[in-house]
Length: 148
Figure 1: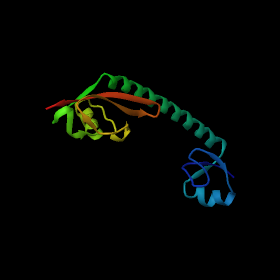
Figure 2: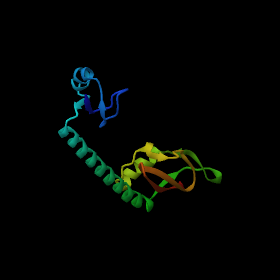
Figure 3: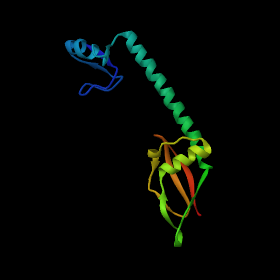
């Protein structure tokens, strides 16, 4: 029996795939537990429409990420920190602090785990931080550490 998977099923397939399984397995397990629906012409048309909609949503999300990357390119976030000789900072500035300050000052919400090369900043001056905004879009923001 051909079924369309509604969710990922181990050793059977991923969500949205049309797979051929035994009739009893399909009726008694997959369909009954809501893991799949029978692959009729109507359900296949619905799946096709859902894939088109998902592709449009993905494209829109990528466009939004590109616009945000352009906005981030012109921003500089400044931190006032205590520093010793030779510009060495006492402590460091983490990606969490950068994300919080970006949210407070500019209203831009970025996940701290999306920072690429997320090492804490521990030297005075300007550092470019890269943020993965989308799987194909990486934005850059300048972080400036100034001695207090």
